[in-house]
Length: 196
Image (cartoon, rainbow, N blue to C red):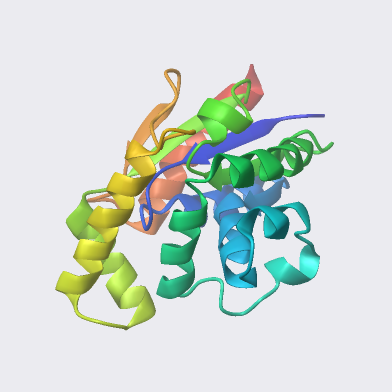
């Protein structure tokens, strides 16, 4: 059975946590597509060459969740050649038997526009900055908030595959939700679609 769940949203919205929970609950494979861009950025050198030669070892680096990796990923993700090099990898993953959950910024709009379920997970910039600051423990809250806003602008304003919800995506604002509440709402959407 092919069944694709596309989860998009800005940094620290909760999309990764929700994606992992949905994948585990329904037995689907999970791909955090942001890791692809983080790995490309952290490889250094020519980003297009890095994207074309990406391998499993690159995705296993222990520094991919750092603020520096996130900032670097946002810079290489605006390059159309990098995005093109990673599209086939993501689409192949999405079509695997047994179902797949992909989370990122252009899954429902570009990578898997035919996904059975599309969620757009968001939260206020202040909420996301607080989460990221607590998670990383680096810098001040104000610095992290500025980084969140800068990254949002870069992701939303890029010419190629900007961050935006697909027209048929279900909007899930996690600003005032606990993790369990957010996962429960996403679970309801997926279960209802599977039941059809």
